[in-house]
Amino acid sequence: MLPLSGYDGTLRYRGGLHEAGVDGKVSAKTGALQGVYNLAGFITTASGQRMAFVQYLSGYAVPPEDQKQRRAPLVRFESRLYRDIYQNN
Image 1 (cartoon, one colour):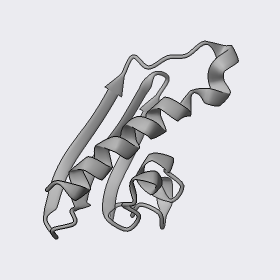
Image 2: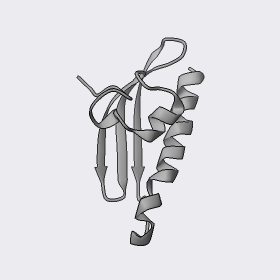
Image 3: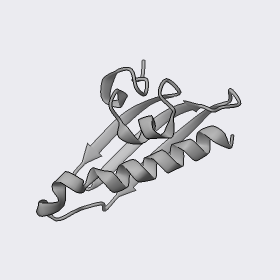
Image 4: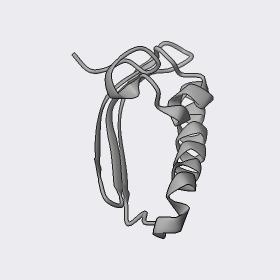
């Protein structure tokens, strides 16, 4: 069983999903290495459709002095992406 956004596992505190308003609507597997952030799973849209998705971000690296702020662009990207998928499908 995959973690459910806002409730358990690696998706419990995933900021981009929470800001998108999709807590309880996304079940997915995360994966991360330095500069790579992945998410693959399913989202239940506002219309009730269950859609498969894969998010693959590669080459995202920030200087060591910016590590505290490194998540902000990722959270913004995910929030906009999943809000759009949820609302428009």
